[in-house]
Image (cartoon, rainbow, N blue to C red):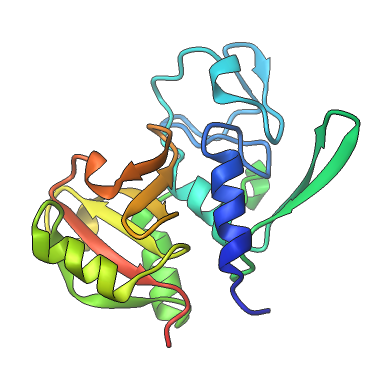
Length: 197
């Protein structure tokens, strides 16, 4: 199946502030079925869960949006099926009913090693440099990914986002939609083009 950027972008725009396709939210403590006594369901607005200071859902959200995920959401009296972009992604926490990955380095590694993504070199670019913005604008498009790092080292990836515009993102953990990619505070970023040419 070819990568469908429009499905990825639609999925990101719909789920950016909601529980993802699989009805789970990755947290520092695991993948609960309930948070603050609220049962998680696909499409549940995150603000209905209440304070969730242990959310670490960025990579899981990205996995659901770019992968072979799907769910049906009731909107009014209609059922709408929402699909991810169609990439093959493993699910190491499938036993906990979690789709895809929950750790940035593992998803970056899998996408790169399976040749579903290419890295725009150098691998780590200073997030706030004009030259980095120019590389994004020249090499990426909506549906591609950004992986943010605390240090220029794959062991220090901390956050992941989907481009939904030329240089704007959608992500979880700190839910964002149509925010400039520099709204994320980590100093280093890796640019991932999906799938590679």
